Image (cartoon, one colour):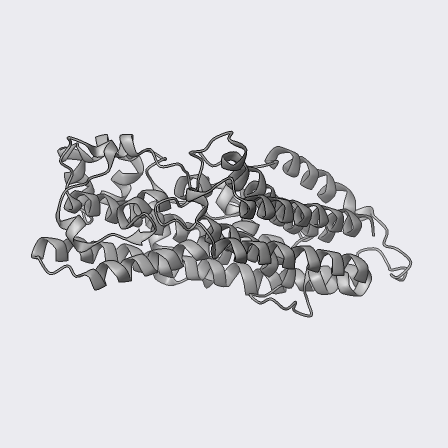
Length: 417
């Protein structure tokens, strides 16, 4: 199961920083200010936070919500087409393409898993691995359960949340249905019976697999809607807000008045959980960017590479592990740059460092570029699942660890200055 790295420590750190940074003095670059008046640096932090939330978090979660909805609808259509005998390979290929786009949007959100994704348990709910194929085979052998999951209008999605175990829910259960050995499933395979060893003797049909995939995709969509609404609030699509309300999902911080985007943008104001702008910077850099770097190097790559758990491999059926890792570090890049670009926005953490500590900014940029480059090389090589103890895996771990160290140094410097 996916584990959260350093979370307790990060939470405690954030509480301390939020409680203390309002009284911290800036260095000599900031003039003396009146009480309750922001310094130049605090104003810059406020501006870059709004830029980051509006132009990184909001569009990524909007894309994730829209694409997960498309994935769900396409799987429902595929189920009907298979039964009608009209399912074509082009249909399967289109579904696989949407799945990968949805997956990429999710992975590019992992530098801001703090907030709704963690508070509401959405991260483990939709992205736990390795898939328990034996348990999935047992579940798909239950004809009564399949009949329940087949009735989309009658509550199949809600029943999936109850009847399907967490290690079969989310992306990786769907991935198993759609991909094998790095390739899209074929129509011929889905028209027949499942051949995976874990399914031996159970006579599970492709139709039953699509029933499962459609219901689980509906649950995935609902949780992506919850993420979108939790951050965007009333800015989220009306249909998405209505579905979240129908599901009775939590969406506001601590049940209060603020959605997550409002909460961080309105730091230091009444109702926000952020007492200082330096506390916000710590959240973005440590609870967000550093946390995903530590997870990628220490767990996503490290567990298999070191032999601690050679089954702990993300996206093994599509063989897209390195793509997932690349998107994770791209998420860090976007958070630092304040926009979905390789170039920093004028209101961004990277621009802030370039102004106030150019040497640190240069070091951070160098480490970021190196991590993305080694992952680009890894993507072009042997898939991680086929060679998880490779030189590419070691290079990626080392580069991401260096980036992680620089992110923490940047957070510490901002805190003290």
